[in-house]
Image (spheres, helix red, strand yellow):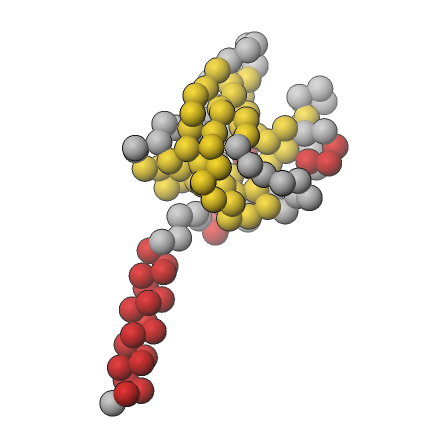
Amino acid sequence: MKIIALIIFVSVGLLARAEDKLFDEALASNAMAVLRVRLLFSYTLDTNYTWYSAHTIQVYKNDSDKRIADLEIGSFKGRPGVPYGDCTVYLVPYNMAKCEFVNINQGGHWFLTEGGSTNSVSHVKDR
């Protein structure tokens, strides 16, 4: 009887933990960094890019050798970006001088995957 109770207890714990997962494994596989963020504000400085100033709540994945804290996230102007509230973002490095996605150690800035799309953001929660 104790073994059955233990199995039920562990199963309930695992199910509860699965609900807490706030990122998508498939989207994460295409990103170098996956973060839970809160949008602070957004701005556009030129005609090509929109920037999102975000507070990092949690780092789920960081395949770079760079520490990730609060950051500026870029996207191509006119594409879906970081929504207001809390969300999970999927990031890759982008070099604006070369106009190409690069390794973060080659001078890139963090950009939404694909430069901004529905595959760049998940698990949105309004504040």
